[in-house]
Structures are given as C-alpha cells and as structure tokens.
Amino acid sequence: MPLIATLTLAAMLLLLEKMLRLFDFVVSEGGPVNVVWQMLANLIPEYLSLGIPIGLMLGILLAFRKLALTSELDSLRAVGLGYGRLLRVPYMYAIALALINLAIVGFVQPYARYAYEGLRFELRSGALGASIKVGEFNNLGRRITLRVERSDDEGRHLHEVFIRAETKQGRSLAATAELGSFLATDDPDTIILRLNRGRLVHDAPNYRVPRVLSFESHDIPIDLPRIENFRGRGDGNDEFTLPELVRIGGSEQVPEKLRDSVRANFHFRMVEVAMMLLLPLMAVALAVPPKRSTSGLGIFLSIVMVVTYHKINQYAEQMAAQDRLDPVLALWGPFALFSALIGWMYWTLAHKPGGQPIGALERVFSKSGKAITRLLGLARFSRRREAKPA
Image (cartoon, rainbow, N blue to C red; front, side, top):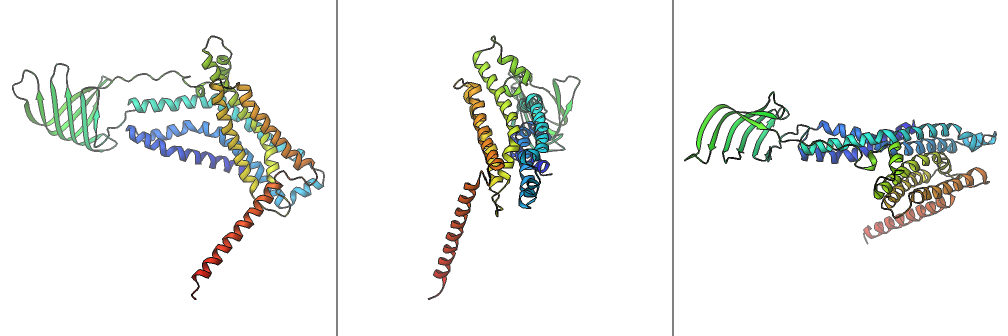
C-alpha cells in the first residue's frame, strides 16, 4: 500500500503542477479544454519514470521502518533472518518495476512524447478546431478579420459579430450582425459563416460609393487557412525508442553532434533504470533509525538523494550531448559513486555491530533541534518579560 500510495501521489503532484501551465497554454491558444486531459495523459509515462523509483524506495523504506520501530526487525534478526534474506521480496518488486520502467522509458515514453508535441502543434496551427477568442480580433487567413463579443454552446452560436474581408482585386466587405454561426460544407477547406439581423457594407474600386444594405440572413463563405502537416517522429532524442537510439548511436552516417546526443540519452535512460536495483539497499539503510529514536530523517534523506541523483544525471546528459564529456564517464561515473555510497551504508547497517550509517546525522539534527527549541523558548520568555507591566 505505501508503494501504490506514494506512486499515485507523486504522479498526481507532478501532473497538477503541469496541468496549470497546460490550461493557460490551451486557453491562450483558444483550444478546447478537453485537449488538456489528452496532453496530461501523454505526460504520465514521463512522470512515471521518476515516480516509480520514488514509490519503490518509500514503499520498502516505510515497511522496514515500521518493523524497526515495533522491534519486530530485532526479533527477525534474532532468529537468524538477516537483511539479505529479508530483502528477497523487496528485490522481486524492484526487478519487476525496473523492467516496467525500462519498457516505459524505452518504448512507451517516446511515442507519448511525440503525441504530446503533436497536440501542441495542432493547437498552435488551429488543426483542432480552436475556438474564436471572444473580445479580440481574430485573423482567419490573410484577408479575413473576425471579432465576436460573446459565444454560447462551445462557440456554435456567436453574438455581436463583426467581420471584414478583402480580395486580391481590392474589393472589401464589412458586416455586423446580432447573431452568427458556423456551418460545414461539402468542401472541407471551406465553411459558411451565417449572419442574422445585421448590416453589410460592400466596396470595390469601380464603386462610386460603398453599397450598404440591411439583411435578416446572409451567408459568407470563408476559405480555411492551409494547415501544415506535423513533422515525423524523432525531432528530439526523447522521441526515439531504445533500439533506435542504439542504431543511430552506432551509425557513422549520422552527424557527430546527433550521434553524441543520442548516445548520451541512451546512457541516461539505462542508468535511471539500473539505479532502481540499488534502491532496496538504500531504503533499508535509511529506514532503521538509531536505538531509542523515532526520527524520520531517513525518509527525508532518501527523497533528497533520489531527486539529486536524477538531476545530476540530467546535467551529465547535457554535458555529454554537447561533447564536453564522454557519455559513459559522465553518466556511469556518478552511478558508480552512488553505488559505492549505498554499498557502504548497507554494509555499515548489516555487517558492522551497532553500525548506523546515518547515526552522525541523527545526532547533529537532534542537537540542532534541541538548540532551536531552547532559542525559541528564550525568545518567548523575553517577550513575556517585556510585555509584563512594571
């Protein structure tokens, strides 16, 4: 349950942070609001690639912490069950989730990222049938300007409409109407704007004065602007699958800059998955607090370590993509240091009598907490004395 709850909570927090910006982007582009949910759905694989390791680590950590605080862990060790035996089931979870994460970052996330960029392109180009921005002048093509004061029924019914159109021959047409609506035609590149109860002004170079007329109903054909096709998949490294990264990274026919970037992205994905195999060891080392202590410092440190390592990998990937560092050294070097640190922490807890890998930090935080409490107490006492009447 802690694993599932943490994974769900982490994914929801990441999605909520992105959802606000997506709503602002979609509204500014005049697109339908339901596109936000499609874009968020395509971002779920990207956030799961970070949420799964955090959920796995906290699930194991909270389970061992509960055993340690209730002294059940000491009982299990007293009957001969060491940490290695107790970690068998957590490692089953770790291997299964690592394979799932490999499938996500290697195959699902590239296609989801491409679909996300496709929705962004369609919003900007108007291919999604973006609604008319109310209260603003909207350009429908090069020579048509439209303004609507109010719209109902998801933009199907328009109120207080103004439209002005020009032709290459110099003719112009301007119209205002109380009501308006868009109608489809047999031609997918043309729509009809039907105006009701309005006035029309028609002008041309051979007219002595513009022609003005009132109407109850008038149809104006509008040629839709031509929409460009979206690019093919693979504009960025995040859109390549793992086999494609291997093929491009090993090809001598691609530019060297692209090859370095692809290799860096491949090693970044692999170290992110390989790191999950170290999380059970780190979770156990940080889960067991010192004797007679219930401090939650290990939980805080575990999240900080995972997020910091993820950010270091992102920076190393950028350095390797710019050919400043070798991808293997830039990404597997921090992994080796991270592995050595976790190995030392686990060995200290499991094989050193009375060993506590974060014991020193626990003592420092405990003393700091007591000092802060004393300072706050002295501050409250001083305020009371100053407030006491003479």
